[in-house]
Length: 158
Image (tube, rainbow, N blue to C red; front, side, top):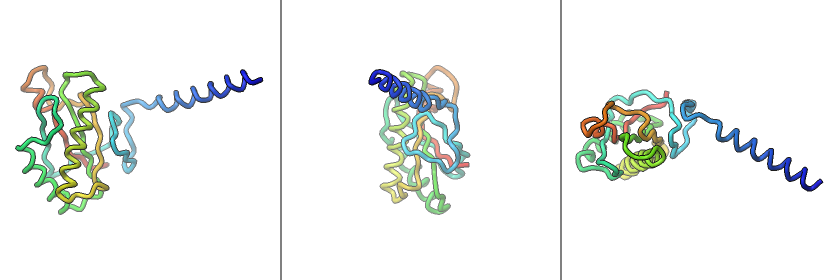
């Protein structure tokens, strides 16, 4: 009896685990269903007018000097528009393992969020998601393309 109960519990746990893992990375999260620190799970967004993309150095998540002015401008636009939610989408170039690039894209998005918070943008107005290398801005296999793919883009929920 004890073995059949244990087997039943294990089977139930395995079924729940499989359900939890069944979510495809192509599934789009419903607008308004935001989960901080999303990695690889798309959030349905549209372009955020007036917000500039921020670019990063290879294998880095630190805000570059040339991005600081852009982020100050973005913070002003966010404040002026009084948007309830802005989505920071972290991206990487194609080099590196998929898991590593997802984590790097998340670190980039979080770095931008922290910078915006330091400029006065409330944390509750900003959500991060990482797409890693999955959504290149410029196709190609050289530095000319890669420099445009290492970025954080700003979006608004649909």
